[in-house]
Length: 190
Image 1 (cartoon, rainbow, N blue to C red):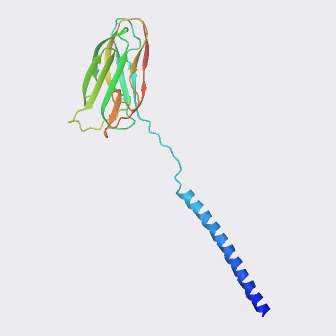
Image 2: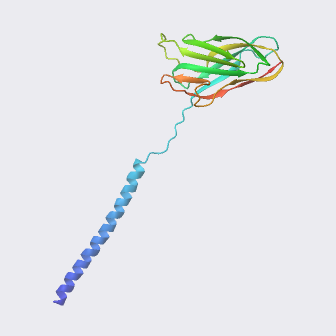
């Protein structure tokens, strides 16, 4: 009788160990599969930076001579986004420059200008009747003429800070401001 009990006990112990080992094996496989699934579903961190719009200044003439009118061109690139409006806020030193006039270079935009002391504010709004998508690609927006009245080194600055609505900017079709970079201009008046 002892032998039968021992036989049954041995059978149950072997069965118990087989179940425990099988459980550990299955739990280990589940952990491995979960890790594989997480790795497969994990979104790899890809960074797509949008360049954004740019605005910069260029002198129309090669050199600037005292008391000889000169012009600055304001250029822009909209990074392949259609533009419905723009603002240019240009600061200059009134000790060196006398404003003469501004001339729009885009037919599809209505231009508004305001001059305050040492600052010129120009706003361009796409005309409602214009149905053409306008993408700026190294596009001259406006020409501004000045008379140099003093010799020396001076600067023109495009006033811009990201997320400010009262400074220079480019506005896309979704009414979003996309300007991200501006380049000022330093010149020596001879």
